[in-house]
Image (tube, rainbow, N blue to C red; front, top):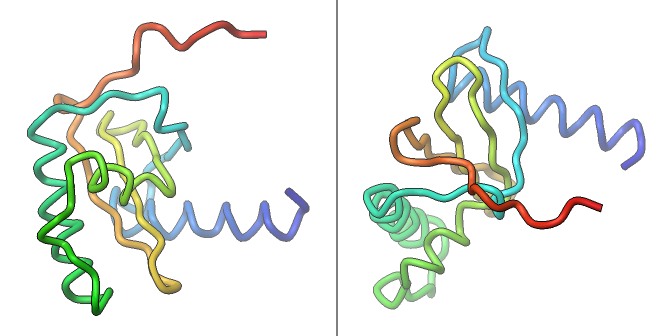
Length: 117
């Protein structure tokens, strides 16, 4: 990532932080493979993905969306909010970001993150 891309990514995080978590919040980007979310959070993601698809993706088939596809829809960017301890999952669609907050009680870090080399 060059300096320009890093600066843009940092600005995106700042915008997401301001809108989703409050202006003074501190967000840390995570790899979605390192987190697990609850069944309730998955249902929320599914409802949100269907709504976004119906509104912004004409011709899509949201009625056929599986839970796995709904989760995958929102993992373009994943942030941990240091203040609330919640997650913010974001989908980047047509030059827009759609983000969903996941409260701290509905996710956790996976215990086995694999071998670190």
